Image 1: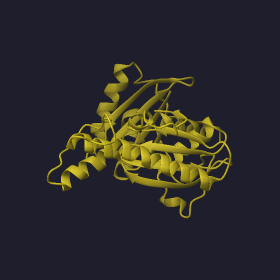
Image 2 (image 1 turned 135 degrees about the horizontal axis):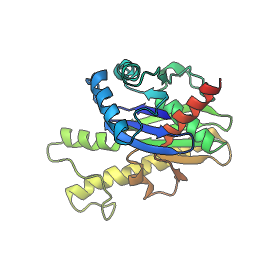
Image 3 (image 1 turned 135 degrees about the vertical axis):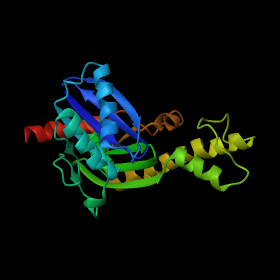
Image 4 (image 1 turned 180 degrees about the vertical axis):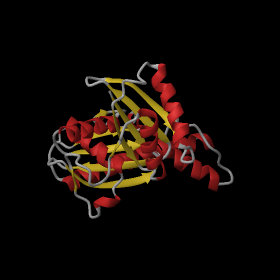
Length: 256
């Protein structure tokens, strides 16, 4: 059984793949200061709870938190007795990172591009709404052409409340109308409908620059549902896109 691990800035997503389907997926909070023993004990408890503590025989990891790379590889060695595959910019993934400096591209961007190209054998734009809001442009030849990065919605609302004396944090949900009639509604309008405009504008620009027919837009990330309900520019929602990409990369490397 494959354990796929995506270490993000806010959450760590884990999935168990039995060769046919995802058995389980979990989201843990990212805590850079935790030791390999702390994560190991927690992981073993999760696996034991579902009777999979002896079933995992492969591990693949993508990470945008470098300090946790060694922590998780050490954890896999100690608690699972396995050498984990760590996805990096020069890993054999089946796609080409066609940016100006491939070494600076995050592993999560590469993994999502792999999954998107597998799901749609053509050009695509991936919108990933998490700690950051990212847009990945993938060509019909399987090239990651480039990325756009904006602050995530939660980060934006926290920054706004933290820097403006008369504003406080609000729930991330759509207000009744774009014209806010209270301070809360005004902030919610700026967050939800403002990000809808951001998404639609960047998707339109990326489609023009990709300059290929039938560009498919795929959404993922914990906050994507807040935006998808208010725009028609997203063709497909795939909550576990990164885990799909990790599985595909593991399969490819195992065959190689």
